[in-house]
Image (cartoon, rainbow, N blue to C red; front, side, top):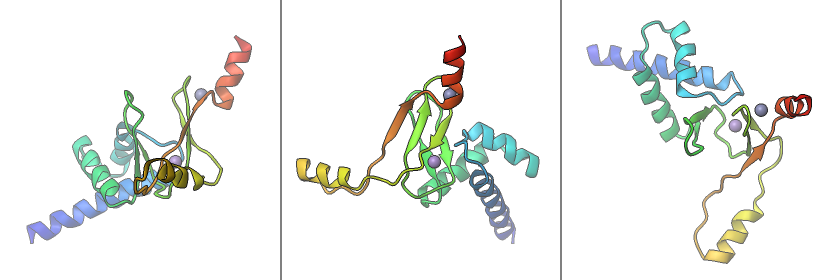
Amino acid sequence: MIQVKKNQRMTKQKATIREILRSVENHPTAEWIYQEARKRIPGISLGTVYRNLNQLRDNGEILELNYGSTQSRFDGRNDNHYHFCCTYCGNVYDLPMPTIKSVETKAKAASGFLITGHRLEYYGLCKECQAIDEVS
Ligand code: ZN
Ligand code: MN
């Protein structure tokens, strides 16, 4: 009985975390998700948030975006899509453009590898940061 209760609580936590992620477009960090989750589930731990994020990622329900030195960000969308990272403010935006299938066929032709996917990231200044740049 205790096990069942524990699993139900886990499921509620996971559902809440997924719901938070799906409701935002800012590709938040685990820390940000944790602060939001605490408002809905007081007493939830950062470790629990990390564990659930990892499970959701492993199940393919969310994406983990890892940009080298910075903290991972999480994405409630699980379809392949492209991102733009602002090198000034650090925000990550979805790019409203279709994915380019030809990069996979070209990579296959060039390497002979079995290509199962690709990731493409753009870098530069977002609109707000371009405005700052013009003022200063
Ligand atoms: Zn920016
Ligand atoms: Mn995204």
